[in-house]
Amino acid sequence: MGQLFHKCKDRLSCQLITDRPINIYTSQFLIDELKEVLQRPKFKQQFPFPVNDFIRLHERICEYTKVLRHFHIAPDPDDDFLFDLCKKVSAEYLVTSDKKLLNFTPPFKLTIITFNELRTII
Image (cartoon, rainbow, N blue to C red; front, side, top):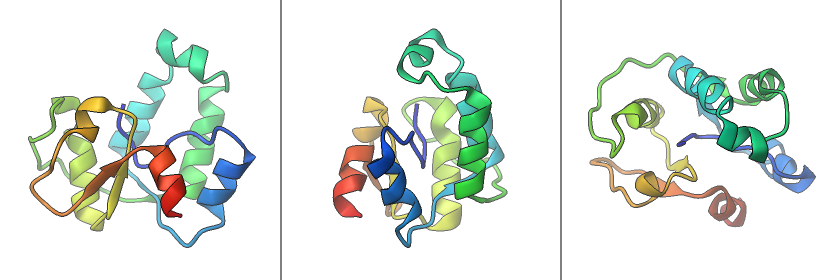
C-alpha cells in the first residue's frame, strides 16, 4: 500500500510529522484506499486502531487536493492515483512501504522512500 502519510508508530513519529514544516497531501482516492486497505486482516493485526480514527487524523494533518486520474504508470495500476497526486502538488517524496513502488522510477522528479527514511530526512 503506497501512501503519502504512513501511520505514526510512536509519539516521536507523530511529532516528526506534526512539528516540521512539511506538507502532507491527500486526495479522495488516497482516503478511499486507506479505508479499504486498513480493513484487510493483514493490516488489522499491524494496525490495532479504529480505521475511522486514523482517517480523521489523516484528514486533519493532510492538505486535501482534488486530483484527476491521468497516469497509467504504476507497477500496480491501483496505485496510479499516487502519481497523479504527487505530480499535481509537485511532491518531492512519496512515502510508502510497498516494495514495488520503492523499486519504481516515475517519469518525473519524485523520490520514493520508506517512512523510516523520511524520519532521517526530517
